[in-house]
Image (cartoon, rainbow, N blue to C red; front, side, top):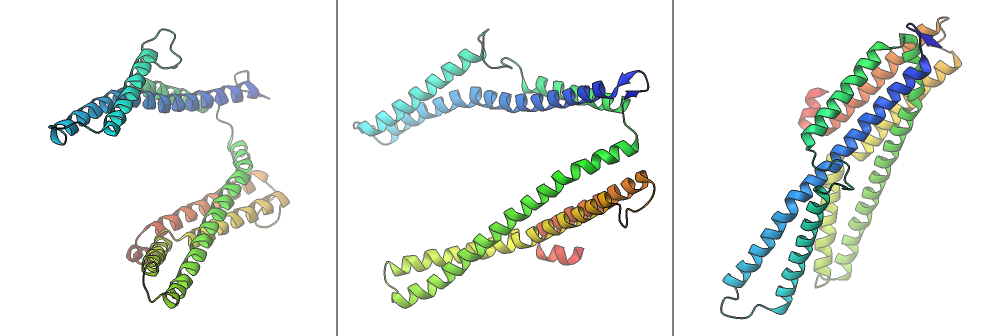
Length: 280
């Protein structure tokens, strides 16, 4: 297929994919460079702090005596490791054959390069924007991955809820058992304190994070999207219109509405109880 202007669809797709790869590569380079810059700054500072601490320990604690060998060995080994790490990092940073891809390059420059790459991608996409029908068809092809993501998150929260509930059940029962077994003397008293602490933490975490509600909402959204996807593929109501473009438009509108409802429910779960009542 050739677009207006004599440019094939395949070449346009390859160009857009390459732009995405360049953007992803720049984002990873920025992450790597931040770690490198952090190491270049933090390692010598840590070395100085270790040396100052070593001197401070000697002056304020063992001024009139010998510092224990263990203390000296610990500080010496730590200082040696930090000194070696500092030397290696600076050697790699300022070496002409540095294995670091962006040595002697600031994070600001990489961010500027990323912004330019994103702008090029936007401009290229605008020049070759496909018609709405093609975009809607492409959107439909991405929905199965969205359904899988929702189901995976739903299973995660469901398992988290089950683990928290079973831990709560076991610890609650163990409190009664330990109380009946001990009177309560040690180690019974310590066990009771630990079990009571566990029950309190799990109860508070379950009420705050609400994993069961999150799992239910995610599963409900995934089922609804899957239902509409199946209806579209089979051409049944409400997607039994003769015009495929009209059906795709209606499908995209419904799915986006379901996703917006899911985000709204997540925001409501993140709010305090009083805030939820006001929203509802």
